[in-house]
Length: 424
Image (cartoon, rainbow, N blue to C red; front, side, top):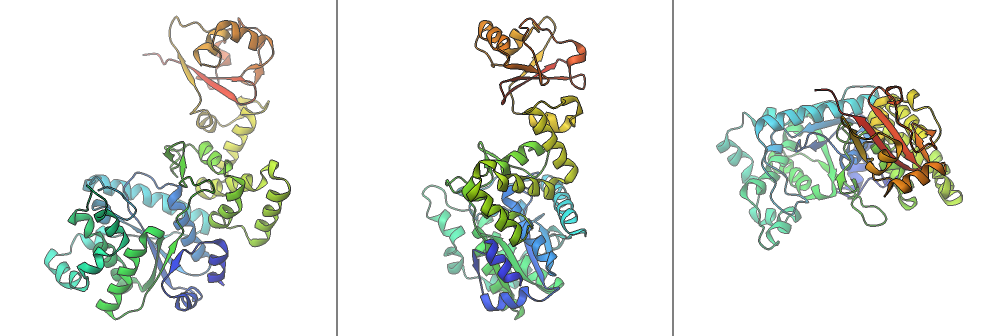
């Protein structure tokens, strides 16, 4: 039963009607939706819980609708925000909606084998008359009730901030989305993050008042790590699903670095592994935590779900080569570049010394030429995974991988990247 599955996995924070929702989830073909406002060029791992939950519902027979906020993205949802969003122009929102739609389609096709039902609320909002909207929709909303919603009250109570009428009206727009999908697509459930509770319940109330219908809502938990860090942040930066913004290697590493206390929880929430497999991995965490089997499976599963098997194999191969003795020339170069994108780098120009000592100092891997010489002579320095003891070693054209890149390693984990300036 899908309801039991969602509860076991920890997918449900709040719901509007437990008995009604249990029956709804047990009926094949029922429509459920979640919205994705295109306020950036890419979704991030914070969006992945909603995406995965919709796909899980689809795999159990429901009909999920992935709603792009081509209209609402131009307004900005105040939920969970301390300050007013910067407004985005129409052209930018449209371009970002197209990019995010492509990400959603790739994810759904990869994990269900079918195309998603994608909608964009700009298509119905662009033709709505303001007077008609205020008369037909606005009349169903009490300002007093809106002021009591957490997303609004939190901003009003914040000294010196407040909320604009633009963002205050967002609740009406999202509620109308639900009403429109109810009328046009027979959709009777909305899911979203825990900060969406006010918007979801407002939509349910609008459906009851304007259409005499019954609808349901579920919110998903707001995730933090066991240590209290906000989920989805890696060294202060969001972890994006777009490989150009977060290289696949670093995406894989983000999940690989999951704490033991979070590994099983994240396996339940973010993968489609069954209870038996997850129970085995839970036992592995307790009995063999040093092997990090759960984290490796988590990283492999989610990377494959988002980027595909070929990309996963490439980054695993790059990691094995970087931290072992593998042949770097046999590694996928794009994956290798992603793997070392955060490493110290040095660009060689005309007349720049290229002996090994100079490279180590230039990369910040040695404080002086003397230390660099001792490190090399002690056998702790590698160039493209080949140990180099000669401190006077000067790389030749043949040493540069793909004609562009030299990987310098000190010990097992400290890497540096040497590249050559391109000819003008």
